[in-house]
Length: 186
Image 1 (cartoon, one colour):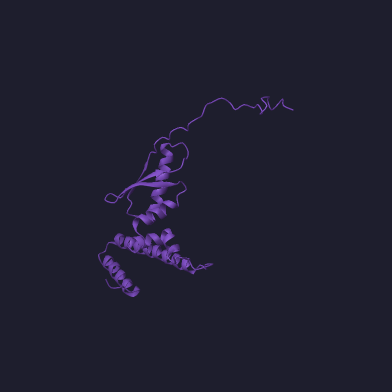
Image 2 (cartoon, rainbow, N blue to C red):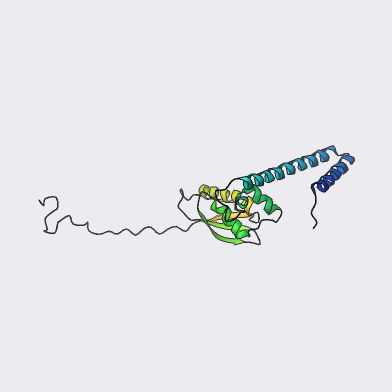
């Protein structure tokens, strides 16, 4: 695949818009122009973010110079959109899930359906369906940019924990070594 210059791309877009205008469908032409504006804004914002992230002074050079770019939702989504993200899917899933306020672990991933199963790893709230749904929605939102191959998220209900073993026994004696109560020993 040969690289397209900005001039070539601009010419092709103008040609397509001109063809739509010639067909006389003003609504289709306006919609196409809006699509071009939205995409230009999206890519412009992404490029501005790349420039900003790369232009930030660092106290020391990062171990991974791509790290700030790969951690950014907008840049990561652009890289994923074009198949350019250098991290594999499990790494991107881990990156997205690490940003959640509620700790979760992966219970399974079906790469044919794109369903990711999660398990909440720490006690949070009542364990009711609304809490699970908020965890699920937070995961869906985080994964959208970093791992678009995840098409659905399911939160497994945690198995009920066994109650802590309560030791019941006689109360420790308050008697001192001489057998008298420590309150009366003087």
